[in-house]
Each structure stands twice: as C-alpha cells, then as structure tokens.
Image (cartoon, rainbow, N blue to C red; front, side, top):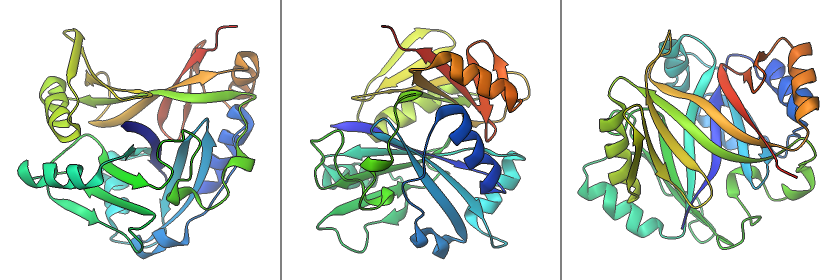
Length: 259
C-alpha cells in the first residue's frame, strides 16, 4: 500500500495562505504541530478528503526550510508525504539505493514510523514515507495531523487530492529515480509526461516550462462546488484560468466532480 497522504507547501507568512484555503476551498485547520519548531518552522494542517495540505513557514534564520524557500524565490511546493504499510521494506530499499535519510524514525514507533529522503539523492521535492497505525482505513489516524482530525474535514467544496506535478529539466530521469525509491513503475503517456501511480493519486513529472524552477508546482484536486471555487478565487485574485487557481505559489488544477 502506498497512498498520497500529505502535501507540504512553504511560505514566509502562514496567515494569508490559511485565509485563501479557507475562503476558496472551504478547508479548516485540524492541527498545528509544535514538533516542527525544532526545525525552525511553524505550520498548520488542513484535511482535504482523507489527505492533508500542510503549510510551513520558517521563523528562524539558516533553517533547511528557509534555504529551500530562498532557493525557489517564492512560496512553493515543498514535500510529498506518502503512507506505506511496510516502512521496514522502504527503509531497506533506500539503503540499497544509497539514498540518505534526513529523518529516520520517531519518538514512538509503536504508532508511527517514517523516513524522509535527502533531496540531493532524490530531487524534485522532499519525499517522506510514513507508516501509521490504522493504515488500512483511508480515514484512519495520521500522526502529523493530530489526534482528532476528522471533525475538521469539510468536503462541501473540495473532496480529494488526485495528483501532484513535479517539473524538472530531465523529467524522465527524475521519474525513474522516484520509481526506484517508491518501488512503483513509471508510465509514459507521451514525451512530455511521465507518471507514477499510487493507490489513490498520481505523481506526474513534466519538463520545465516558462519561468518555473524544478520542484512541486501543481496539484490536481477534486472539486464538489466548482462555482464557489471560481468566484472565491476571482475575489481573492487567485484565479489563473477557468480550471486553475494559485495559492502559495502552487497551481491547483480543478477537477469537477461528476454527478
């Protein structure tokens, strides 16, 4: 089992980003994790279906997050966090692939255990694989989101994350690297798109275009109230097109739910 459970974005100021997620997608905060303060970050998490949007902001100088934000030059996508039912196998696989770990384990591996992969060994976005108790339940517990996330879920506007897109100068080679790390095959639909299917979503790899730099630049989400999203995004000056909005430097592609 390998699910896309959490996507992290990074910005300088959490307040405006929180306001836009609330007004445009109807999302609510379920948790602010004091544990990320040791990395010089503040954060919040919002349920989107049974996945989570996390936004982090550095509050100290010379942090890894701050350096990443400076490198990208603007608010942007940051991490792709996946839920696995076999963290032991994942850990062994990274060792065989010589992928270093910047995070290995946790305080209580009886309930959750994770590895975070070094971005120099697996570029594009910071990848994390995490096991959590209750992993067979799509709505099950998820340690980073606190102990009581379900009451904060609102699917009246947006209901699910369907894909993330990572852009790279050599997207095919990058897709191959991620394929090896995740033990999932690459599908190539044409010369400009490579993808890896997870159990509930897709990781898409495409070439760099325009003024984009390498990284996580797009997220596809299922929308249940399309007209609300368009009107709210237009009001917030976040509307990119009739099917895309921009929040925290990331393009959110809107997939209208079929009735």
